[in-house]
Image (cartoon, rainbow over all chains, first blue to last red; front, side, top):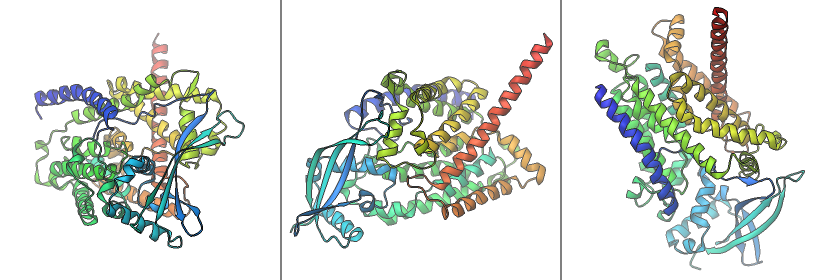
Length: 162
Length: 337
């Protein structure tokens, strides 16, 4: 390749790389991180040694109407096939907002129902309850355990029209 | 770079392709779950069917095999990059991006390196004089890698990683350990690491990532920083159980492939590609065997653990060699005075 073309390629990349980084930052704030992009994850959050660590956790339950019980099920089992590194992001994107869940069409509810019946055939329920909680850890405690759990959001999804 | 072409195609073929289960899952998903990131994936309305995924996957395997033997290499290299972007794009439309774009960038950039110059079907059809090794492609890869590392480090400075009143790496470790269930290898031991050591790790991480952009100005410092990055990834894998295996493809581009070629040629001239391929297949076989005996609770794979560990050994060897050479130079210049 001619040196002139190589020089132009480098000039383009030297301009393009910071420019796309700026676009990633702006679009990331307005909507979500664009893709593809020449960026690595920042892991930029920190915690003070005086504070606790708080994490958001999703829990899935199946409701049994006959005896009014809730049985916890694992999202990893329901959504088997998804990469583990993708699961939390998938749950946050699709199951953290009751308004978003309300937009699920019949096809989506049927899909969830089929997954539930396939992975948990003995449960025989079509009511899914999703609970989001904030779990607080004390990092300075001798043994680091969950200190408190505070439920922040809870909603029910009926998976059939019954 | 011909040997790197063979390494890259086998690395992708043996260790980086998504499993069939991922396609079955994605192909079954209703459109409500299609949440593309801003970008070209927004051109689609939903996930393609399992059949389409299998076709893409089949095309990728064929492309990688063509890349391995070096047939229509430039076109196939670009096609490999496109197919990887396409498949990964759909996977990331679940709602979460994995930052492994480098595995698609490498074949794209190396398409222009003349990495089919040797050990390839294309080289039989062309005269050696028609090839001109394009070393600028490695420089471009270094620029991209250095910038991407900078994008990981710079926000950390803004986020407070260098503040001695805060703990960053330790906080991320706790999240990975307790929430993500990443409790394999040395993760449990890491609960005993003191705050001072965590603070040193905070500073070391920022120095490595931000400093990478300056290090790429010279080949020697690029290699040193790559070795440091490999050690960093090894530590991250042992403690946080996160391997960053896709990065190792671009790190491998900066190995001394000329030296590797000459070393393999000592055993049998012209069989260097066979020996390299054989070694990689043996490593693959050993990994498959080990998977029967060792399982991880986290999402670590045996392939990631083995390959990152091999990379760590190579990095330590290179850094030790650099230190010996530097010491010899110092002694020589000290003696000359």
